[in-house]
Image 1: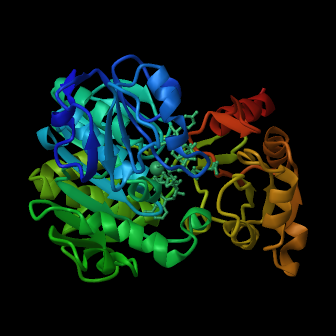
Image 2: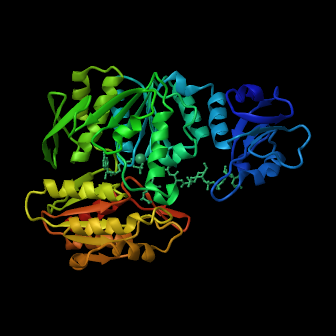
Image 3: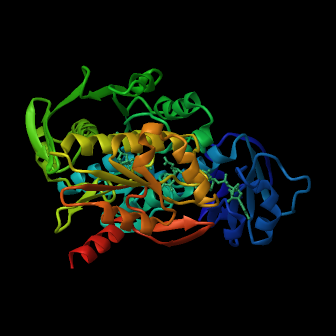
Length: 487
Ligand SMILES: CC(=O)N[C@H]1[C@@H](OP(=O)(O)OP(=O)(O)OC[C@H]2O[C@@H](n3ccc(=O)[nH]c3=O)[C@H](O)[C@@H]2O)O[C@H](CO)[C@@H](O)[C@@H]1O[C@H](C)C(=O)N[C@@H](C)C(=O)N[C@H](CCC(=O)O)C(=O)O
Ligand SMILES: Nc1ncnc2c1ncn2[C@@H]1O[C@H](COP(=O)(O)OP(=O)(O)OP(=O)(O)O)[C@@H](O)[C@H]1O
Ligand SMILES: N[C@H](CCC[C@H](N)C(=O)O)C(=O)O
Ligand SMILES: [Mg+2]
């Protein structure tokens, strides 16, 4: 329970009507969840305008309303707070309601197109190994020390973030590693959080349905670094062409990591095999269990953060060598017939290219690379033909299939992917709408030594078709099918 006036600390207010010395019991931005005594924040969304639900929120018991435009008639006894921007206000209010939990632990935000989940999860595991209580806010799951919550977004809404951070503080968590998505930054989900550090991985094609232009997408990522305080560190991948740009206007202490260029944290790949990566990190050799050169970047970022958070080098290198891959990120097994099955969350052109290049780099002979891939519906359409072209260029055979079609027609998505396939690669590709059948066909086409890549859904345990999520797990499916072949 908190007084309205305390909750409004640091919120940019344009007008107030009504008393501010009343207690509110909860904060809500969804009128359907409002309970007696709550404060309702009306947000303008992409589908609905939360201002239309102010009346419904009051009927359900809201005693205070935060909004960008006051309703024409005000209800007696309800407090109305007009703000410039409801999304920012919600984030600041959420921080105040939970007594600013982000300042009570060391919060590190990881942003960029690819690698966020991997880096955040490896950092969580490394700090747990080092004997600290750690927290994780990621696409795959939320972890509060050992306690797990299901994740719904990569970056949850600001109310949930502060709720989880508060739970972490109460559990004695000292370090929290969180993914900061571009949607999250743009929708101000991370506004007002006290970050100890920020990490930039890379910037490639994604989400151009939402951000419209690459420049806008890039500037949204940059705004995260612009908002870091002087006390924080900003660690960027300076091999990425937008890495240094992220540092241009930040007040934070600037650090770089790189494999190819001069940087504060440097690594070299000595060996890259199916069993792992041998790296030279800042002059010391370390054998790691992760696969693929992109993971050298991820491991180096983890090393940089751990060093900036004052862990000792030898300790960090030892833990790095013990870390295992993250669920659905280059997760693989070799069946009894010698078929290698890889499940990877590559759902962007760059990720797909990296994973296929990695497979091609580390395969030893003339094995076939059979790729099963699709693209999600209601998401960036521009990436579809690019992924079609890359999959067919870098594989021996490709089966295009459904990912999460959501509200789109999956056959039309596949047709759009296929427009990117160049004529010389037509004969390499087929399309099978049903994902299970596509995976089965891949196993029938594969011989001993061949590699099957199932890309796009990684850790996901569902397939979403027209708003309905049914159980579907790529790793489980391929394990069952290959087992069936074995028996
Ligand atoms: C495109 C997008 O990001 N949409 C997010 C946005 O939804 P929206 O703008 O459509 O909201 P809306 O449905 O129009 O509702 C507007 C407001 O009215 C309220 N409302 C609505 C109906 C009602 O009856 N009563 C009511 O009060 C809503 O609670 C909301 O406050 O705000 C919602 C509430 O916070 C989010 O749940 C929703 O995420 C959707 C589900 C989503 O899929 N987002 C994805 C794209 C996303 O955010 N992805 C990134 C990661 C991407 C990546 O890097 O790969 C992530 O961080 O997860
Ligand atoms: N550093 C990297 N550079 C390029 N590609 C990467 C990198 N790390 C991982 N990938 C590829 O991208 C996929 C997604 O990785 P990860 O889940 O770590 O990224 P993410 O940024 O969290 O993605 P999302 O935005 O969907 O949450 C992996 O399965 C792999 O194919
Ligand atoms: N965080 C990403 C995940 C995409 C994963 C892919 N399987 C899909 O469903 O498009 C998004 O929501 O856009
Ligand atoms: Mg992620």
